[in-house]
Amino acid sequence: MSSFGFGLITAAVLAIATVGFTMQFAVTNVLNLAYGSVMINSAYVTYYLNIHHVTIWLALIGGVITGAVTSWCLNRFIFTPFQRRNLAPITVVIVALGVDLIGTFGLQAVVGSSYVAFHQTAGHEYHFAGMILNGLQLIILGLCAVVLGLIHWLLKYTRLGKAMRATSANPNLARNSGVKTQFIISTTWLISGALCGLAGTVFAMNTGVFEATSAQLYIVLLLAAMFLGGPGEPYGAMFGALIIGLSTEISAAYINPQYKEVIAFLVLLGMLAFRPYGIFGSEKTL
Amino acid sequence: MSAELSKPGQHLVATGLSAGYDGRAIVSGIDIEALPGTVASIVGPNGSGKSTLLKSLVGVVKVLEGQVKIGDNVVTNTAPEEIAKLGIGYVPQIDDVFPPLSVRENLEIGGYLLPRRDVEASIEAVLESFPRLKSMLTRKAGKLSGGERKMLAMGRVLMLSPSVLVLDEPTANLAPLVATQLLEEYIRGFADAGSTVLLVEQRAKAALRISNWTYVLGGGRIVLSGAPKDLEENPLFVESFLGGAAPTK
View 1 (cartoon, each protein chain N blue to C red):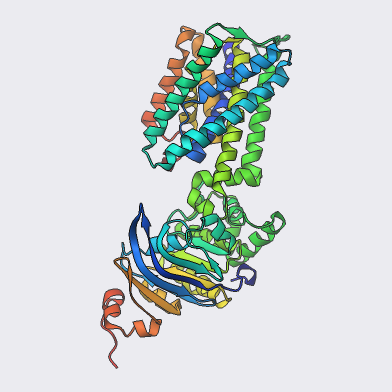
View 2: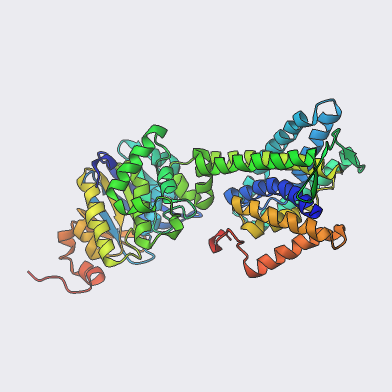
């Protein structure tokens, strides 16, 4: 059961990250492989604010803003210009990979390769249903629930969210209906970027210590969760994150935890082989 | 057709129009117009450029030469979202709804440019005209049948009470009875209520029945045009599109 508890926390962090990741893919068709580097850069902004006497929860807002602004800039100044040239989608994937490497190792060049940690306390331990969770982990779970609830409200009940879904489903028809899709796309990158920044910070909180390359393999978990739920499907991303989070942590109880990304990759391969459009997706998604 | 769903039509004119993709013209030298209170139809074989022509009028495909005017506004190469603001409703041949969105959400996106307080009244007006949609408001558009989907596509553009309706093969893949109802009841009704309709239609006979003027497109150019009565007596048109010989006088 303790593995289940760890799995829930991993799933919570992954869910925040995957929802942002899949929203970017849904609205702009960009598989942003630089997501992990934006996450860790955002975590470092939180860290520097935190070590300069800003409480972790206020510093987290700095990380969220960093994620939002960086993601918006990536779309505006890198991905959109490449997409406008009508290049093959794989070109943009390669560009994203390049941005990821520059973002990660550029950060490492600046901050060094030592591990750092936030000034935070894990809080009391709580025992229930065979699980042991500390205060920090409970806050991460609560944060995840609030964020996912807000995303659900945004997508389902607001004019902006419906326009985002319409733009994702059929951008030309959305424009013919009067939707300014460029504005919707920019807003989506801001919101998904904010999720990326938040995910980076809570990822770093959860791991306790981190360094510039800590999120490098995280893209495997993101891809597995996204493809499991269905590419471009925010609700699928939540479901995919839950399954990947639980399966990787529970498997870590039986195999070397260093190989838990392999479990995620196996799930991803299985999904691609048998249902490439994911559980919540449709064939048209791909 | 609910009177609330139509506005007085606007004059739609395209002159010397060439349009296409990547700088290559698919249609050229096009002169067409659609008048308020009338249906103007475009017929022609597959690949003649009918859909490209309509897309160029609503800003989806680039106009390479010529001019498009709606009422007093020159709208050549204007963005689709700006054209929608002028009261132009466009229903494409395919991908005419948002499949993952519910029927209600599709209608709400159709009314995206309306003040929020007017959206509900507009949905009610659309449902009055398409009562079959009432029972499926929560169903995803991707789960609808062909006929239901086309009604939703029509309902979506009617949310803004357009003054000009541009329709690309609205009866494609519909059962004959549903197609006839859509053309004769809804589309003709829209023009009779005073609006302007420009229609691309594969079923030439059905198009002639509801049109005031018909253009024949071939190889990206207008090869023939006239009132339906005149076309029905034109041997070339009858042989090409009506599958028989022209009536002898």
